[in-house]
Length: 97
Image 1 (cartoon, rainbow, N blue to C red):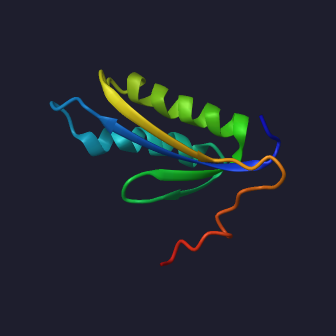
Image 2 (image 1 turned 45 degrees about the vertical axis):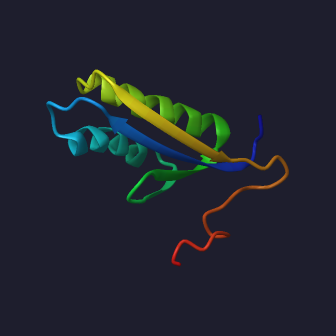
């Protein structure tokens, strides 16, 4: 698609009500933290910056971590900011407002 850095925001919402929801979310965050990509955890989602293919793989791996952790049902919301001619960076966006 593009060889430039993009931003991908991912939110996982475990629907299993018999277990601690936050421990399941942490499984996905652990994958992101170990991936080597630039990321920022926010209250509603985790935003990552990196190459398109790499971020798509990290998003898939995060979902697999939920499955491997015993999560039977979950929602995944993904948003992407893509440019074909230049990188999308966290520095260009004011995140301290």
